[in-house]
Length: 126
Image (cartoon, one colour):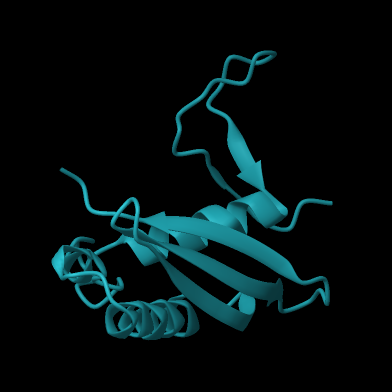
């Protein structure tokens, strides 16, 4: 039985029905987490406080201090805006070669004890 569903923001088509593809359960939650993390405050109409505003940090010189601040902002946005999950860990590592960061978010669903992980690449757009 499907608990959670969401639109696939890659806008792919279901090959059988030709409808928009949907994400279900774990995939829907992982997409939701990515969307929350990559949303800037003020970007969503009628909910100006939703978002992590990490983009501004991505234009700072990459350092462990910036990685720590990214972790903090990711934790805050998930705790405040994704009630379906229990956050287990957030790790942000610096990728010096690409001048970017990689985030690894460990969580579990509130009604499920299975640990899940979602990776998110954090890099500035040119």
